[in-house]
Amino acid sequence: MILENEPLVTVGMPAYNHEKYIKEAILSTIEQTYKNIEFIIINDGSTDNTDKIIKELENDCKNRFVNFIYINQDNKGISYTLNKILNLAKGEYITFISSDDTQVKNKIEEGVKFFLQNPEYDFCYSGYNDIDDNSNIIKTTIPESSFELDFEETLFRVKYFSYFTYMAKVEVLKQIGGYIDKIKIEDIELALRVSFNNKKAIYLNKALYNHRLHPNNTVKKLQYMKDGMFEILDLYKKHPKYDEAIKFWTEEYKKRNYHEFINSAYSKISKYNSPSLKIIIYGHGAFGKIIESLIQDSNYCFVDQSSNKDLGEFEKGEVYSKKTLSLIDFDYIFISVLWLDCNIKNELEKKYNINPNKIIQFDIKELL
Image (cartoon, rainbow, N blue to C red; front, top):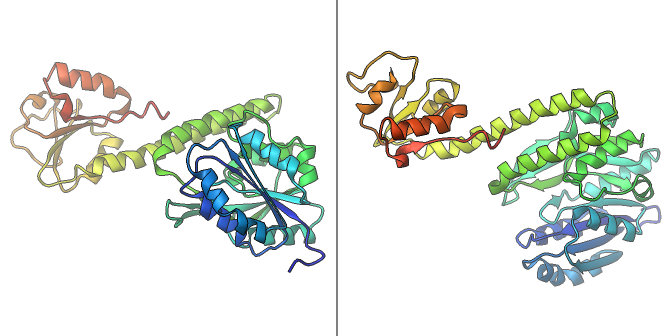
């Protein structure tokens, strides 16, 4: 039953090639505790079974929602599709959901409750959960306490504004121009534009949205996010905080990328942790010691140009000179000197006649 004072909320879903997840995304909208919902799905030229799955749930959607619209269009891109949903919306408020994500059951109810109690606000953001392929929660991102959006602060806290965690007044979102076409990370751009235009917005310290992480695209996604962030910052070149923001995000992405590099390297290295393997770690620096910590069960030693120790008898964990490379019998050699890995690999092959299949290197340059 819909109460008289329950405003209509439009939920928009841009869908693209998410046949594996879209049913769960739609069901999370059907199962919302709030009743007065208009649901608009636009399939943006999917080439998989997305269209088929949406149509299988079409009757359920028509029975559940006050108004249900489904459009199957040629691929136009995310910003075009979001703006199309915005222009179709009949609700007083609007929120979005990606076709591979889900919403916490009371997401819309919490948003409406906030707006009814605080009508002076235009946008209401929430925290979010990162979920895995099986919808298990991996990590929750929420601030320690709720805070209002301020442009300069938002420049340095954009991690909170990723994904479709917000609910907005439809007229205000239209007033500031909806979504800008061809922007890589439209959610973060919008949060900055909201605060730059002095719209009243708050971030609630509640996780009401579930964002799905995909394991196989992390490196590409990091580069995409980095490019997108600097693309957005360039829109504010005249702002007095521009140079500080550029410096901050340059360092921030180095940290994020190195963290991701270590996670990726962990998976690569761990499979060599076997008592049956004899391994050389080339380089006794910080990354060499990380490798050491991951292959404790194997027989390993270091080779480093700073060492003068010649090989007497192979000792686990010992650091030998480079010239012992010709004397040590081993299964694999890990190059831990990250920025010189190609030069070292070339030297190992040509000077020491080491089989290329025995050489394991890690290319951090593609990340940083």
